Length: 115
Image (tube, rainbow, N blue to C red; front, side, top):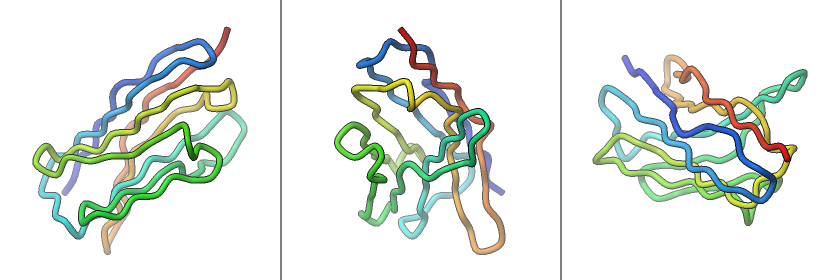
């Protein structure tokens, strides 16, 4: 069983920065992948970035060059660094851990971007 807890959301002006954290309880291994998704009101949940603790990482084109994903397996934590935030980045951001038998999700953390 894994429990995911996100933190770091908040309200910023356009151009601002935030760093989200997702801490996982339970055992995380180098074969695990974790991801960040986001969901804006009235829109479907979309993938933002993925990281494998064995070394692979990727961010989606919509945020490439502004967002970065990183992880610390010793802390069972994955981070999402978000720079040059835009109003269209406003959403609830969710942490995800896929396993063979189920998907684990955090409760989400709100990111608001407005002037």
